[in-house]
Image (tube, rainbow, N blue to C red):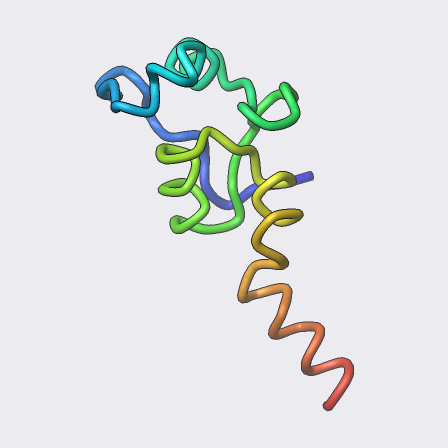
Length: 83
């Protein structure tokens, strides 16, 4: 799968209070490993997905399964369905 947006630079990621519950968040994110599925994080479909990764540590596939398809994919589905 080809992604438009790369994994963001993790060198300046800051600890958060939630890290007390998820102490492996920062090491996993720096290693580009998804917090949800433990798969390799390769990139993202949108800038918003990049930002979500910085919050949750979820890869694009997990974000799509939790939040639904990206706007671009939704638009394509609507055009095919209602076009």
